[in-house]
Length: 466
Image (tube, rainbow, N blue to C red; front, side):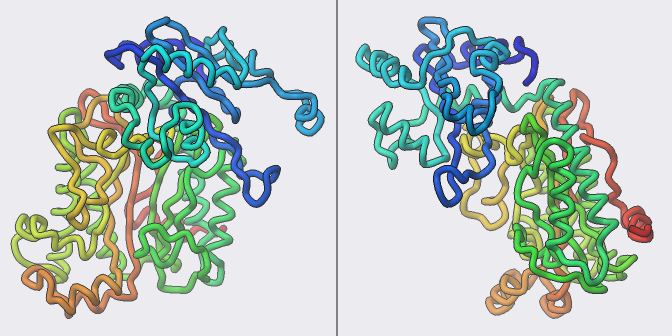
């Protein structure tokens, strides 16, 4: 946990930002069973609960009663049966004091407290739940049908949390850098161990061990594949062969649950082929141009379009596209090769606060998300950047045979795309490069220790004996 004052100050600021009275309800997460009740998945506390209370323990809830100016934690100490099986743990009372909370009540008291508040017409603010057990809790506590819960979540509560959690403090940045540093070690290991005959599964397992040995775990399921054109490829079923590319998108989560998220692409062979190096260089240039734009006041939507235009320029130079770059991007011709967004917010979640809604996290009332246009509908961040934002930049080029076949059959945007030449890349795979940044007062700073990006730097690592 952070210092006690950090949690007290966070809660005080939230009360000021909410702009109205009522009760703020926080539901922690529960253990979730894999196949029977006592065999559970690794526990992960809700990130917003963690942010304001810091306690990583299931079966907890809390309220901030703005009108009565009190904060209450609801939960139970371990029973003797639980102690028999798990041993003596730090008490809930001790943990609550570290979070700056003196008022701890039994879990059963929450329903009574909320019932009394509701009976007097007081407003109970809650955030949209993403786990079914918390939807059922809200149904029991507030008598809101599960299908209506999302629409009745408190928008002022969401907006206040997003505003506060978006600006990372120095202590948060230190945790994120720890996560990124572990992710760097994961990527270096993958680069060194790749060779013909090794499996994707062996590599994925090896880098997960690095994350766990650092005291945390994976921030998300590892994407590591010779089929890098599949954007979220979690199926580690292939054996590496000479001439292939490996795309590794993996990151660590610290013990305090802050995330790092990096991607590198490298050859199975000791060096890139000419074709691989050419495509890699196009992506690298797009990455550099996009990341150079990061600064307070810059819309991330414009950072995204900078990356898109750089990709088009590079593909034009290789003869795969042609025509006016601005017109090609406006028409969406680049999305044959780059189907997703250039980046997202990062913090306690790898896609930070995504459970609260992209329309609040990544966009504003003045800048609505485009939810229908191919490419833009996957852009999770578009709004103007502020000092303290932490985010990713991750352009890529992906040659997806099924998408190519569909577009070619329709002659879609043929005035921008050389289909005959693109056809020769259908066995290529994909390239993505990703780093994590914090927006500073004058621009941005790359988080974590350096991880090679230039083709020659990666080849130098590939020459090393593992």
